[in-house]
Image: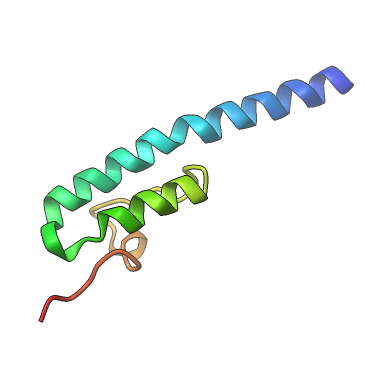
Length: 72
């Protein structure tokens, strides 16, 4: 039983760390799409701080609300 718990924790750690590059790649893509309106640095920091669990989707405004800014 202890081995199973260890394996499950190892798999969870692996997949959560593997999603950080995906998250950062999405931040870069959104920065390219929205330019100065998108806060790429804040998006990347959020990826690292949440271990990639917060994945921005450039086509879904609900996932970009904290990273979009107005320029005026």
